[in-house]
Length: 305
Image 1 (cartoon, rainbow, N blue to C red):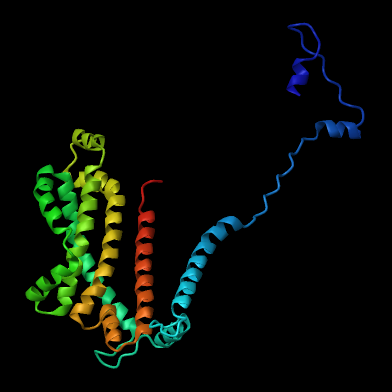
Image 2: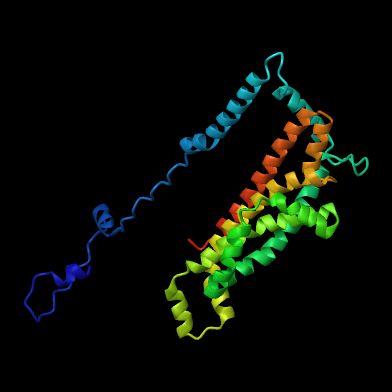
């Protein structure tokens, strides 16, 4: 309507003539003044991504089928010493029908043995994290301390974890704390090294800004270093827990008592090979679950986004 008023004919400076109202509001007039309404776009219909689903499901299934096929072929001969997949599956069903039975200290279900092993791993790993992560921050933050500890770490890190077990038995005079000590000493190195590397890779500009703002050392650690080092630290934690779960099985085989490692060794003494194979799968599943849990934590606390 504004365009219609200012573009009507007439001399400059004179008032335009009034526009006469239409005599009758016919259909044409109604059509001219009616606002145009844009058509509502239709929402795209959801369709499942079959290709991504197949890529996520099919390869692992094929890998398991290949493993079972090779296992079946290897145990199909008359002189095969390993049990077949069917026999092993039957043994697994019997084991997990009552995994938490308790007939004394030397006769407990596989569930109790896994829990006792996880308890030892949790204690040793927790102590290693409480010592290794702060030590990694100190080594990465102060060059003098890093130069002092670097030869010690390079010397002790390659030592086999089981080589520390006799030291634990000598010092603690008991199998359980010796196994925890072995977990501690093998878990601490990945956390120390990865945390120190993360601190050393923090951009110098961040530290220069902290120096200009006169931030305290505690503020530098909590506000600058910790968010930047967190991905490295969680990588060290994931490597440490995997190493701890590997070592506890071997340590329990040597120390005895209760635990999945001792259970495997006890079944070997009883020549119960099918239970050993079941235990191998249980150890692998628990280790995979621990790794996936820590990877989920790493994604949760990632600052990349």
